[in-house]
Image 1 (cartoon, rainbow, N blue to C red):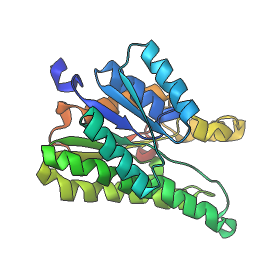
Image 2 (cartoon, helix red, strand yellow):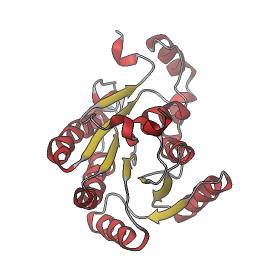
Image 3 (cartoon, one colour):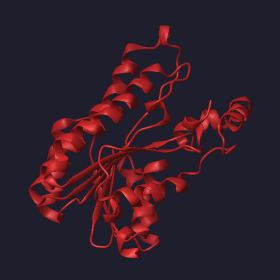
Length: 254
């Protein structure tokens, strides 16, 4: 049974993987046997992340590009495939947050959210899928959110982008399943990450979250690894267009 979840012989590109959820997923997939391609815009942070993974025995590449730049993405992905080999697994993790009441939400912040949270999924997904389609195999995992299904005050544009990630995932599966690709999403609940640092530091919010979440606590990033390994492995060979909520039960309970 262990072969169902083995990633030996596979290579995974994770966008936004120099810290937080992306780094945790990179480390987890490496432990399952995958060769890792780290991505980010900050070369120094990328190098530090690569060094940390290599110290644990991981096989790591660094691929710095801006996931919101269509041409840069195509150049980086095509160049890597030509020089280093196939990208078998893609995790579209790059994302950002901006919290402001909707009536005062800055237009430029809204545009940045659109580009970072949804356009990047299209750009990188398309660039990598073109190669996967030729090989008739590939795994694409998009990082969605509980905000794919729910909303909270002050983050309406973020909620819109994560709803779009959920539907783009369905569209990818609809177009690409016939080519042997499995395209799914992971929707994390509230996790202790740099993106949520302000909320984690707010005792009032943490108290509300603990009461609102059936599990009664914040999630830890390592708790996303199992879902990522499942969706990256042969075990999910007939799973397509699905959003897997890893949220301590928050979307199941009023």
